[in-house]
Image 1: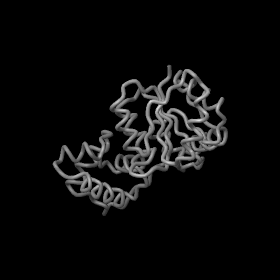
Image 2: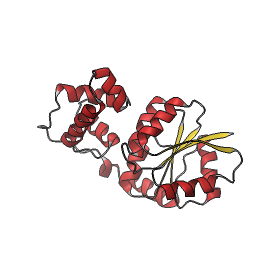
Image 3: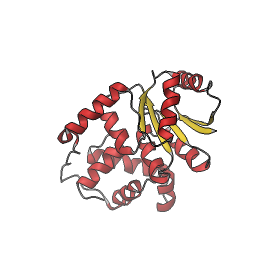
Length: 215
C-alpha cells in the first residue's frame, strides 16, 4: 500500500485529485493539509507517509517553502509538486527546494498514478511543458543566478539568528520556542529578512543569503 498525503487549499482542486486517485486500490490518502505548515506537521506526525502531492500557492506557508523544510527533515520522503503553474520561476524554485517531480493539475489519472510510481522508484517526472522550460533553464544557467542584494541590507543580530534556523529547515514554531519569542514575532522578523534580501520565498531567500555569505 502506498500512503499519500495531499497539500491543497482549494476544495475543487482537492476533490479533483481525490477523484483521480480513488480508482487505484494500492493508494491510500493518509492526510489532507490546507497549507504548508499543516503538511510539515503531518510529515512529522505520521511515519507511514511515502509521498506528498504538494500544491504551490497556499496560505500560511506556500508549497515550495514547505517542500524545502520537509526534504531537509525527511530527505527520503518523496514530494510531487502538482500545480496549475508552469512558469520558469516556480519550476526552478521547486527543483531547488528538493521536489522530486513536477506535474500540472490537468494531468490525467493514469499519468498521475504512473508519476507516483516512477517517483517512488527514484525517477523524476515532469509534465511536457514543464520539462521544456526546465531544460531551457539548464542551458542558460546565467539567467537563474541569485541576485546579489544591496550591501546596505544588513540583518540585525536577531534576524541573523532566525536566518540560521531557517537554513536548517526549522519551522516558525520551532524557532519561536528556541528563542523564547512568539511565532508572530518570528513571522515579523522573517518578513523583514525577506524585504532586506529582496526574496520571494524561502528557497530564494536562502540562495541569496548564501550568495552574500550571510549563512
